Image (cartoon, rainbow over all chains, first blue to last red):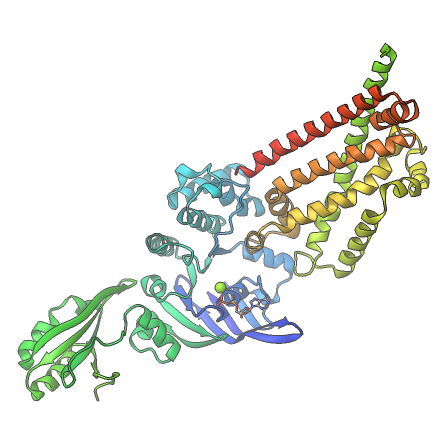
Length: 340
Length: 217
Ligand SMILES: Nc1ncnc2c1ncn2[C@@H]1O[C@H](COP(=O)(O)OP(=O)(O)O)[C@@H](O)[C@H]1O
Ligand SMILES: [Mg+2]
């Protein structure tokens, strides 16, 4: 359980106070994968650094696992931090230590005895699939391998919370995928709370349960990923949703033709809905564009279709699609708008 | 050359090695911690201590700007206090340290500043105490730079020790001056100089090997 209560952060730059975080309220339940998305400079890193107090908030309270971190002295804070793992964009491994020694590092800090340390390191390196490379120095590892070491290191002292600041932003798409899978598996296996900081919507849709959108130091929207995906309210959220094809520019089509943007979420993605509706309403669909994806475990499909048939049939088709739970929007030839 | 001279050269070589070893030891022991403090007490680092930071920086700068030959003379009272005499090989050590320690401190400072801030931050995020960060992060991560710094300091000390020796100290520099300069014995002067060159080469070679060993990682 992580609670941020009215957290603000100001930096003094050239004698002027710059407000980087503005009255942030967040409540992250135990065991959840929580995304925080925002553009570069939005304040994401500052926010996540306020959770483990690498950065002390100018105002507000930070509570992690019922301990108010903002009220602790340095010594107690250092002990609490061992229960909060952190994974970094640029891995931040010790170059003078091998993979295994890097994973052992936080255990040395926490004073684990040597043989207990060795067992834990082996367990973790096997978990992240790097046991064979245990004696390699970071300079010999690929980006993905370094991040696996980084994750193993963060998990070593058995934390309750894992903070990931752009953990996949320095990796290629394929490696990103495998690291996200690893993080999701860790969440399932150890019921760890994960905070995922990112500027990429696909990271949020692939593993997060809930998401907060940060813009200029403020949370402009927050909720379950599916809800934000389907009903983005804030322009910034809409923009991020567009990144994953939730809504794209309409394909070129003749003026006067009815074109629908259909969003299928959940089980209906697998049903022959278009076929059924075509029969029922006496219309024909012509698929112009489409893609399918997955929000964590929830499948979704997006189709842009042209509808051919009588005016009456078209109206019934739209109604029939909506009745089946499809989100339908009419795409106008110039710009787009929503049907009634 | 007469056999007695060989003995003298041998003794002078040992004296030089002794002077260098002792001076390197004390320079590292004093300059090292000062270098660490110059880093961590700096603005925005582990333990910002603006007052100490500025005071130490000033002392280091002053010591480094005094010409060595002046330092030798200025240090005489302190040297007497520390080793009981102001002449001889041991008496050469305090001025050598006074000159090399601040130099080494700056080298340590530079090496430690090279350590990636992200790595320090990662250690802080894991709950490392400042002392743990110094011993387990800063110093090990900067090891190649630190070893290179010790090598440079030692090589510099060889040059300075020749000068210190010349002022009644002893060692190879003293020998070179006594025979070469005062008695016009060019042979001895060249021989002792050659020996100093060999010392420098050996030190540099060993230092470079160590740096390479640590930075292969
Ligand atoms: N230590 C600091 N001092 C001054 N300004 C800072 C500091 N850290 C971050 N900032 C500023 O705060 C803003 C947000 O930074 P950051 O949290 O890193 O954003 P993000 O991670 O979303 O890209 C940026 O404008 C950045 O320049
Ligand atoms: Mg950032």
